[in-house]
Amino acid sequence: MSLRFTQVDAFTSEPFRGNPAAVVLLAEFPADGWLQAVASEMNLSATAFLVPLADGYALRWFTTVRELTLCGHGTLASAHTLWEEGLAPAGDPITFHFSGGTLAAARRGDWIELDFPATPPAEAPAPAGLAEALGATPRWVGRSRLDVLAVLEDESEVRRAKPDLGALARVDARGVIITAAADGGSDFDFVSRFFAPGVGIAEDPVTGSAHCSLAPYWSERLGKSELVAYQASARGGIVRVAMAGDRVLLQGKATLVARGELLVPI
Image (cartoon, rainbow, N blue to C red):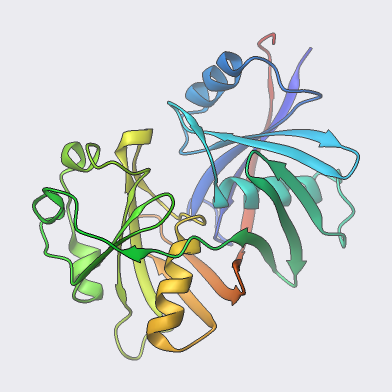
């Protein structure tokens, strides 16, 4: 029996930009080994697996090498797929159930809004070798529940960084976020990049879950509850963020680039 899947470029309205994710629709979750093998075959930074429930969908995400605890672009791609394929009513929000609780997706005009838990970073000592791995000395270092956050001097330092991925893979965290305030006159409030070689992602094009840390950090520093962010990877992508208590509202666009069938048995 074949299984349907899509590929969606998330946090962009243009194909071949933003962050690509595969979305696989299942009747139930098979063995983890099968899910991991499919994600490895897809060879993207995230493959999302969906199972319908009475009140939404169960959702899991895998990189090429391991399961993720939280994934923004995989969730955005999942919501976009469900609406585009007619599997969820176009005007209705979608509830996703994952290992850490629930997430919600809703349409806001041309944008998709995700309701995610905030993961504010707390100031912490820099991991050994971080500055050497980044090729830059951070102005501030913090840790969230998932990642290390390194604030650099300015936008140009973020954009030109060429970190040692082998050294970053040894940092005890899911990944390392580098960020700075956007240059004056920019359409954005801050920029960032995200590296997670330890979980099979050298540089992630656009990382929704990283903005669950970036939003509270920059909201406090800039005195704004709503901000516009740019993730300055080679593909690039725009994320609107808004603080809502202990939640972060992430907004992004998405575009469907492929439909297909998996022909391998479960």
